[in-house]
Image 1 (tube, one colour):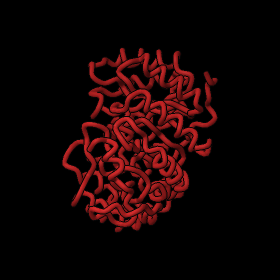
Image 2 (cartoon, helix red, strand yellow):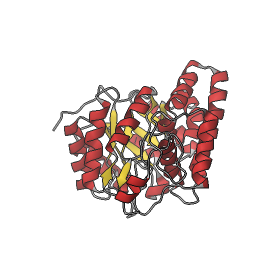
Image 3 (cartoon, one colour):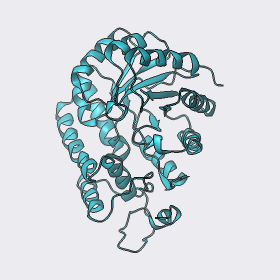
Image 4 (spheres, helix red, strand yellow):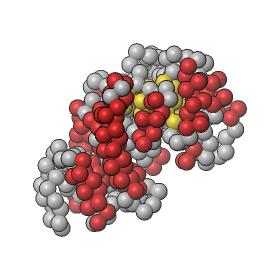
Length: 334
């Protein structure tokens, strides 16, 4: 396995959590993934996070997760750090995936609390300590209580921050009271990094002492998120106000779908409309269609997000710039 790495961790900035482009439930859209990686790197992002919530990781089989890791690292070509999600109900599987990621050249790992069984804070810290002993790479913790039913509490994180391999946390709880406590924890270890998940909180959390965001919108409009981050660092309040307005507009794509999967649906739909990758969802979810798709298109047009790759027209009312969907749907049996 690769030795422990510490020099290529993102020190701050925008690290988009990439969706997983699919052609079928068990087939990666390889060309789409390559275009997506190029799109975000050209947009100035400070790292890439794969196999998180946006990547629908829990719904992917282990073979496909490994392919996503190998290809993403290859496409990134060491231009930005690659962070790999290893969250699992099985400690053994998580460690195995972390070892694979290290062997393929990933820079760091990410894990949330295990889901399904309720876990106490003492048990969570024991899990973190086991990961610190077993994983070959530095790793970030990930608070996502909406999905896991439990989060790493501030006192648990204070203890975890004493472990060298724990590099920081992505917090998607949306709880600013908790965030303020995490800022205090980070203040006790200068190299510990705080990234916020909900992009609508990027401005407020950075002003409270955060270091950046792991924001889904950063893959649809990377220059927008990176620009907002830079404006905050420079104290350019006029730019912050305008870019926050645009970010709020982009956020409309997350509520087009009627179900809990609407955030990922919106991101995949937008990337498909931009000609970057397929919008096929993992089973049992479905892609946005018809008027829902038109609503996402309207947001992109208002933001001036033009297609980067023009695809062939596919019939059935497809518009210029849409990535062909019929071939993907046929492969998936849809």
